[in-house]
Length: 335
Image 1 (cartoon, rainbow, N blue to C red):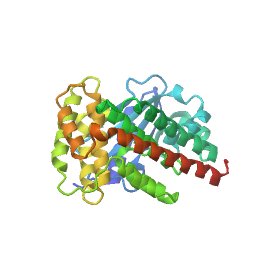
Image 2 (tube, rainbow, N blue to C red):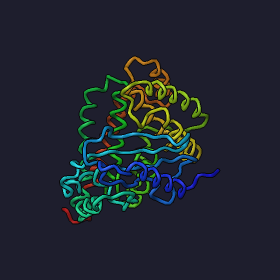
Image 3 (cartoon, rainbow, N blue to C red):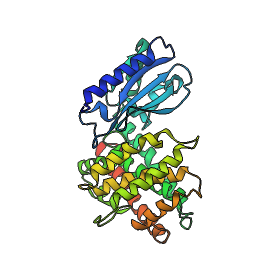
Image 4 (cartoon, helix red, strand yellow):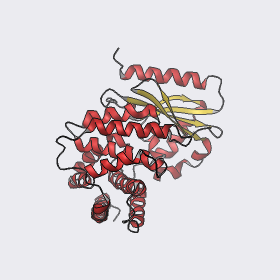
């Protein structure tokens, strides 16, 4: 049976109905993410992103609840106290943006969601607030680059993780000038759309140059996906495994890589590189699964020998991002 967006929305409604029945701890629940749009699927997979706001401290901050191989609930849990000052969240790029796309409200006791959105959304898209959200990413990216300057000879999953996270923050700095930050599966395509709109398409191609390949002919996608799957399985056995990298999520990432690998291999490589590095970064340093990841890095020419050059190129990229932000300020009347 073909799974449709409407079926998943109905699944979400029923799940929330069960969770909130006679449960005074839940203040509101709303649906965000790709399912709130018209085209939620990458390949055959998607997830149902829900936000639960609790009157007390929730037991978990995030949980993944599987509906099968290709569909999961991805649920964020927040205590109500986080939202005590809604106006302050106008400059928060993650918490504030939970409310910026008019998500589907599935439960709202005492109109708490309406109260929050009114406080957060007012002036949310003023130039000063947009710039503040964007700059929070740039500041993190530049600070992390400074730390990498002292680690050029310490090539490891930890330093590569910091490098990729710096790329991710730099990209979301630009993306936040036109909308909300993006998750890893739609990151590069979203960056391309944003940079084209801003008249700076070179920022998207420059991002690809910082991790991608010139030629993907014969690239062993399936082999690397299976190796990544073994690393995910190893991490899933750990008590500290992040929910987003548990074994039930492998198909979610695999489907995205398979969807992009023919027409948009740079996008596929970003997802593979990002997820695999996050997983190996979370495993013990001498975990045997790290050997396959190192071989993968060698195949994409991302090694200790070129790491210092990559960091230098990243510096130039961050300067281009900063120049774009300054030009955006001028156009927006902030300068």
